[in-house]
Image 1 (tube, rainbow, N blue to C red):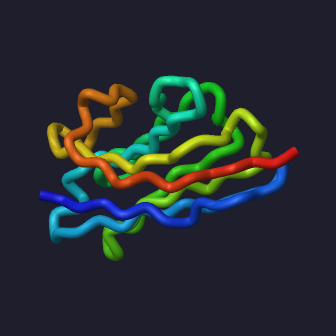
Image 2: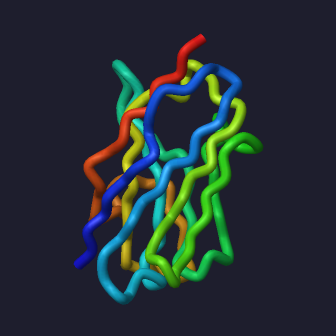
Length: 127
């Protein structure tokens, strides 16, 4: 029901910032909770940040809390991840994901709750 396309990945120096964006198709974007997941080299895909459909609640992995900010613009069908103070361990492929199930109000950190996924965008942090 929704297609997701990430953008904004690239190479950034440690300590720097990067902003990822995810554009979603459809006209029911506010029904979906959105999240960013990351798959670092040699690791399983992990939850990074999530935001519910009406943007009343956000949730962050401890590793990025205070450094990353997730936001959304339901009028533009976009969700963003502002990443500051980047570290080498932030490297990986970042995926945008969406879930409609209770997504208007709910934020989930679980990969299995998400039904739709973008293709991923690579973030490389150099030190």
